[in-house]
Length: 170
Image (tube, rainbow, N blue to C red; front, side, top):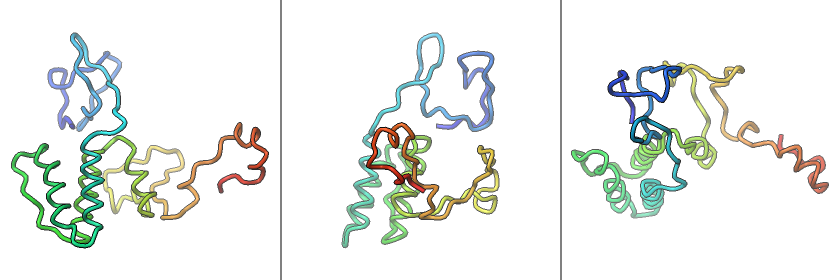
């Protein structure tokens, strides 16, 4: 999924104007005869369904065995040497969340998971020493439940729907 040391041989780029950096992503690349290109992003993959099922089992009383088996069905496809997890309870749930982060990396699930689980965003240097904020505001930490987790209602919708007058998200 990542190329630790990209070179023209192991990581060809679509044009000379692109630059290579350590640990570039291969996740969305599709090989095309003659040149690399970006591919379509599927809306739902089977791995997402396995992870949803594993999480549901792990949060069900007595579901640890089914959760571990379901998780193993996924991770063994990525790593033939993987072993069935021995975790139970919250440790198993955290293992499933870690696998969600790795498997669904770059697909926008992390934001939805943080919002769904009412967790804070923490990209502070203490949590991620190599993180460089990409926003001009430098926002690297947002508490759970903060209004920044809500999208604004588009202005055109506010103007077209008088029932929304004064109802903008904070």
